[in-house]
Length: 209
Ligand code: AMP
Image (cartoon, rainbow, N blue to C red; front, top):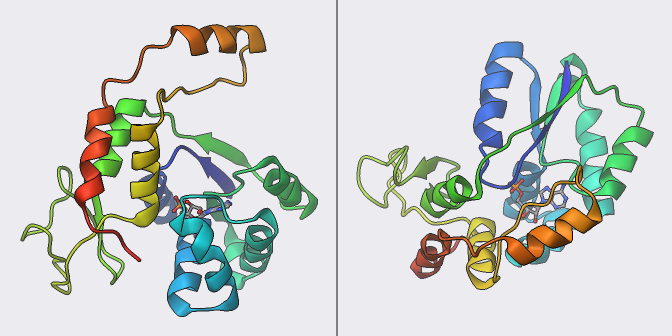
């Protein structure tokens, strides 16, 4: 079974993907994980991708498309896969179509803005790959990895996302199903989010470089 998993950062794509992998035994292909591994490994792709990721921007389409194409050709992906974090642009969606890969379903995880900000501001990671949440999955000792004891940090792209939303005047989810006229009306009438102060809190946490 071949699936595409969509959702805003912090929506819980990684957790849902893990459950689907356990249930269906398919390959979990996360472009974020692949890119982070490339950065860590100091590959040519990693060096190029790092500056975009550090700035909280999308990595250029062609780099990500080539990466996914190569990953989809691997043996384990032939038994089925979950694409997590890809496609993220129209060019990537078109590239996926032109690869001739059959997709059985696209799952979109819908989560409120409030919840996303709460999840992201509590997410902490260790350089060994372990991941925690200050509220939902705290480490045994605060700020330290259970597995290797190293200090936990907030991921750079989480921080950038949260800081961007703390700085932006409004955080508005647009529905492509609505007409442009209705979208502009909602831009004028949507109140400022009350959860932005949560986002601002994470600016004091050290970042993963
Ligand atoms: P994620 O773990 O999916 O949130 O991805 C982490 C970072 O990797 C993103 O903030 C982007 O900089 C980069 N990235 C991941 N997937 C893509 C993609 N499909 N296109 C462009 N950049 C991506």
